[in-house]
Image (tube, rainbow over the protein chains, first blue to last red):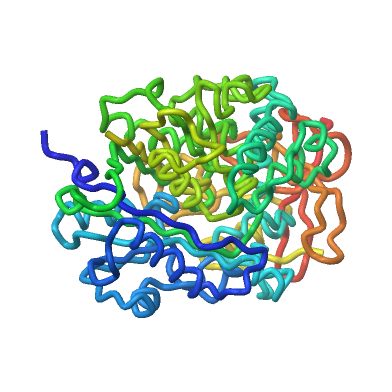
Length: 394
Length: 129
Ligand SMILES: [Zn+2]
């Protein structure tokens, strides 16, 4: 069998900037903070880095969701890349990681820094409307034209449809969903870089206002300013570096109709995420039962149910009972979930918080939130496009 | 208050078809499959013979949410945002607001149009027939 590209690539360093709501530092400063720290964490210097990639690139639109280009980051870091990429399309936030994996496996680069920066808190202060899908223009075009005229001005309105359909089909309830927010907050208490660390009870969750039924305030992640960076290295170049290399055991990706406004299925699942999950397990001998912890995308809490089932971690229609009460997803449960607080409590690092937390666990840096003897971690990103990885430490 | 859709070449028919009171959805002239949003070719058979076709305007509520958040100043809340599975074909979905009354998944719906400038927004309410 051909050696899969991800088997040739390891994560050798990872870091996060400070998180702010807002941060006094610019998006470019935060990016440099994260990248330089990740490079140093790997035991490398910027001159060792020959590739740089990000999601999604730079745009003046979108309210701080795309504040930094890889070219300007390279210039600020003093990197002279031979390979560079900004990917806004396709398989979620992980697209630049998967592309970097293939570039490294093909010999185009040896050490690539991949970053994700967000400046949504700063933008929100500059303009209340800046984070809304409606934007400032008179008329709405593209994919948002199907929803914004109906005053569905936030992605929560779309994903609330999924939550309601799931509740209806499987008899799920709010307490089962609320267990995710409660779990994430309990974990965030041990994460000094989490934006919300005050304890949250299920009663608090249920007492919070409904934003878009059945989703409530604490079902939503929070926009922040911050940056995450990881260093990917060829496995030969990873030997002898500062950290034990984290193997990319497998990766899976898919994009479906939702990306272009065409819904598949009956609104109780994300069919394309299931395709990403199927691809993931095709590429490894490991099994769902062999995962020591899980960092599952939680832009909204309902994503966690969708992803747990898409990745085969729980059977279809069972995620609601799996999270109920929180015991099975707790740090000492059968599948510790979102151990750093996820996006619900740590802030919207936009998928890269989950990837960073996987490295924290596998490198044993979790402190009070450390999962004992964590050697494998499954990570997923995305609500509209889908990416997943299994990371493994020897 | 509503932000209206831009009339784009592929989608203008959907937003203007209410002028004569009939909802239209893109349909393949070769295999008969409906698709929404419209594409330049049929997702089922690949034919480019796709064109707007009148539909019944009936369907069932596939899912819904009651939005309580005033995302912009002046937005009247609560309101129901929903997705309709049109009667013509399984999993043929359009988004809408459901007007008035109690909502439940599976309830029968019928279309009406809300006219603003050059746009006729398809809206749905309970079909009591
Ligand atoms: Zn056809």
